Length: 350
Image 1 (spheres, one colour):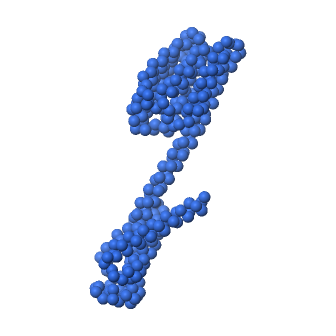
Image 2 (cartoon, one colour):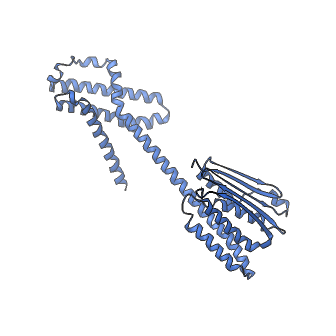
Image 3 (tube, helix red, strand yellow):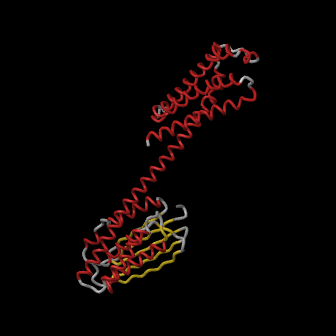
């Protein structure tokens, strides 16, 4: 594969210089009768431009410009262009003029010694020598930017995959604990819980493979999870769920589920009386707003002062950073009686 990439790169550079040769010859083709003389003079200058281009790209830019030696970089470029300017003058004086005297009979006399100090001619030749180099530098810059963007996207995709791999077992572990507790009690509700769990796993395993999913499907997942937990807790929990979702609104999968999991785990499981959870989801093509608030059991000061975040919440914050960057706001409030999350996502910029 490396050989294939190298061959493709070499082919691209060869093709580029062929295009340059055709371009320079075509610009003088109508005005020059002797096409062999035209090819020879253009081809030599193209070779000098090639030397300049790869000297700048392979040596001057990485070893001078990229190391912040700008003055040395510019001086080196000017010196090399002057050297190539003189090489072309020598070749013209000793090869082209003797070989094609007729072509120079109607041109001004060419004196080699004058070219060494003819700085106006040297300055005027700089843009011509640099023309192919500038094009190659632009191409290389665009290619590196594209490669960097691809690497960042691959890195982000890998990180998201890793986070989801952590998230799914986290959810499954909590749910299996619920099922285990019911099985120990030999509850008649166990089959119902298994059915709900089956629906949830089907959604997670087969419908959450894309980067974004419909928000209404995520809301259905939350409803199924609530139904599963209500089987377990019965009258110990009251859940209020308000939603206003357009059919086209989308969100990254499984983000909202973790907030709901935490509400049950930390707000209901240790509550001796009746706990309450309030959810609100609103979404359209531009924005998504999600709010969840749960009561907290007052058992000890230790529970209130404990500031450690759950693994699931940390993963969600990382996932939000990767997927939405600066297009979201997450506000978490933790008081003695209540724990609330307010998430706002701007989706029209995604």
